[in-house]
Image 1: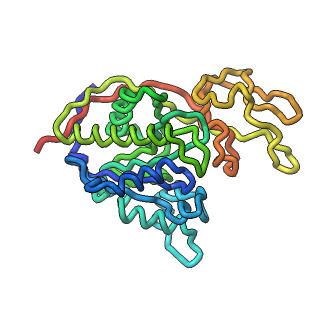
Image 2: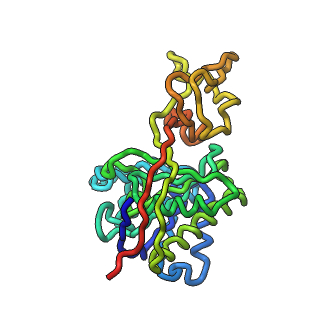
Image 3: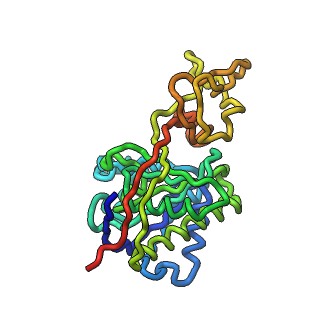
Length: 310
């Protein structure tokens, strides 16, 4: 595959607290803000952002509306009125600070730190097949050995991309779990810190003129979401994730494999094609009526990249 050159990536935003009860990002940002000269590491200028301070103060996922669903083009351009939800106002503030989304003025890389209650290890989540983001993922995957490192691609046009990382020229969410909401675990925090440090290390290497060789990377692509079985009259859930699926994110689900265990005792089995489950039994997705996502795994060949010479 061809070699591609990019302009220097000198401005990066490290964001935490987009969801106010996902504590690894909150404490990562606070730790970075306390360090002297933490806003400049070699050739990389770092902006640290506590994305949703009101939700952080309340230790809640959000106050009025999920902030990480507020960054579509339509919502970012919506007029602000007295009735505008807090998170939508905050999304427009963040877009002004780090973007504007889709513009040349936007920061080069947005890295948004998240936790999940699902047993997902460390996951990169991104929209387009962005070679810069893919190379950072490839670099981190080759160096972190304490947990599995995977990538999920959301096949959504950038105008409809709804999460904070879409504001940057390049961006990803780093999702690490399992960790309960409102809790900080040392092992999960250290995994997040290692990923952030390696991201900055890669950016410095890139800016200094290093060539990063291409190759194949493994990516999961989301196919659909699955809700819990529900009572048709009350709409209440009637089953929990089956013990054979619980904590088995990214383990291939075959037709006939148990997915749910009804409270009355019967198993509900997976139907259809073989797919990989992730975000299994995520606490924050109960309100969204999502028991898990299902996706396919495929390999992508990425080109070698280096900084563009003047």
